[in-house]
Length: 70
Image 1 (cartoon, rainbow, N blue to C red):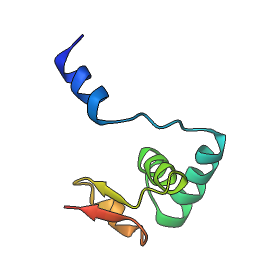
Image 2: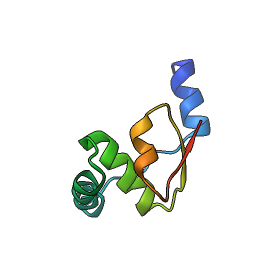
Image 3: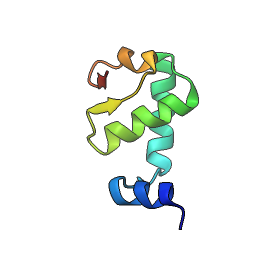
Image 4: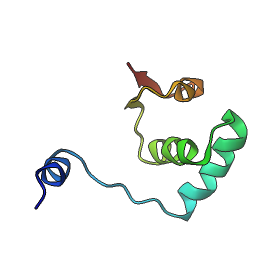
């Protein structure tokens, strides 16, 4: 197994994206003027009660309930 893949599997979990999250992403796209991939991330965070993310993407700062690091 690739060392990078082993690292990711050891420290991260993959979250399922279901139809509810996909629908929520459409609302997020409209409400916060995000691109589809960013909207899916935000909708997934909301669904799984994740309130903090680490990213250099400035667009996530438009989400009032999401804490963006750095």
